[in-house]
Amino acid sequence: MDKISFVYILSNKRNGTLYIGVTSNLLKRIYEHQQNVVDGFSQKYNLHLLVYYEVHPTIESAIAREKQLKEWRRWWKIQLIEQQNPLWKDLSEQLSR
Image (tube, rainbow, N blue to C red; front, side, top):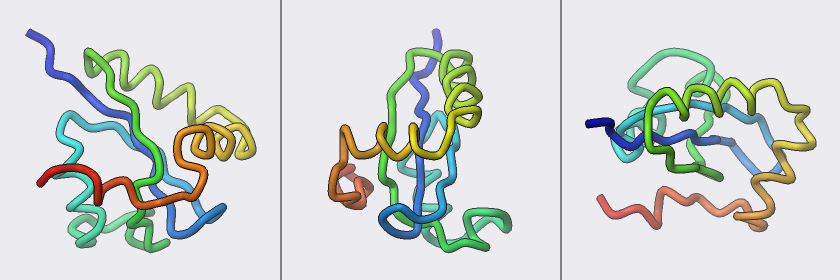
């Protein structure tokens, strides 16, 4: 049985630096980003705001979508975020912990 997976976008502020990732455990992964558990891009640029995410039925479909989004122009990514989250609110606050 496949586990649901997520594609997500983090930022440090409205129209700021963007990070696109994929995970099968969104709550855990966002917590890791926010606590700077793993060294890397998101830690370096202080990317703690979950501004967008999608649910996928399989990890394979999530990875395919992640690769697609990473190829997009920045403006397209911003439009995608603003369609669902026009104020760039931190969506992690809405997720139950």
